[in-house]
Image (cartoon, rainbow, N blue to C red; front, side, top):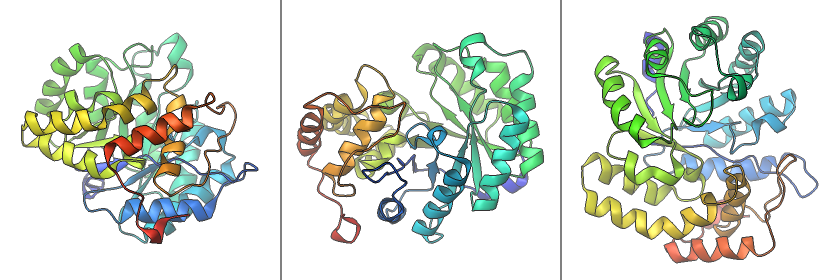
Amino acid sequence: MGSASLALDLRGLTPAPVTPFTEDGAVDYLAIQRLGSWLGSIEGVKGLVVLGHAGEGTFLTQDEQADVIRAFVKSTNGRVPVIAGITAEGTEVAALEAQRAKAAGAAAGLLYPSHGWLRFGYQQGAPQDRYRVVHEKSGLPLILFQYPDNTKASYNLQTMLDIAAQPGVFAMKNGVRNMRRWDVEIPIIRREQPELQILSCHDEYLLHTAFDVDGFLVGYGNIAPEPLLELLAAGQAKDYKTARSIHDRLLPLTRAVYHRGSHMEGTVALKHSLVARGILSHATVRSSLLPLEKGADKEIYDAMASTGLPKVPSTYQV
């Protein structure tokens, strides 16, 4: 872990915002201003991670990616850091992407596995090399991203420990989605790398993981930051009764957004949820995402209503 990275404190909630579009498919920078300024105003929100899966980052041109980073940086007015998803497949092109992100104002990078590893797996040492090169060539502090266990891009424990020990790596976004691995590996990582900030990205399993982490880094933070901060506080206090109550209150919304046929549909559902909260007026996405089935919007609006969460303050409404 590099000393420069330690200034970034993500111990709290770090939402991963969607990228709003106009109805004709252009990036909606006015909506970014509303969304980013609202999220950045909430006490306990420690950063925003843009251009990830929820942000449809791989669906944007390089110029759009840089402009989206700049727009979110502007929207927060310096209150919280903006972190960019770095998704390019090859290590050298990922380093170039990280350089562009830094030039656009990103304070750190969330480095994705090389996409080919999802199907074919990775060579021993290749993930460590990817983090080393991207950090050395860009200077960006990096977040280690642990993919689900049912992919071949999920790092084994030693690989995670190796990456966590490298200069510039200051946090881990863990989405292993295998609770056997979580329960065994998280205490070991905590013991071996006590300064590493451990963040859960288990949008649909936050109750289980809330008791072991420093924060949440989740797309769910777009739509329900207030109760997620309460859930995190309850978890850190080891208050299961309160945490369970918050989980149960949110469960209809969790199901409507994340218990869908594909986790990618969650991005579309997040946009419908932001319509329900008054930030967006529609849920336009880019291919290769598609609109949800007929009636899904009402299902999501009803689920949001059941949580008791109000529309955002009028300052941030469309």
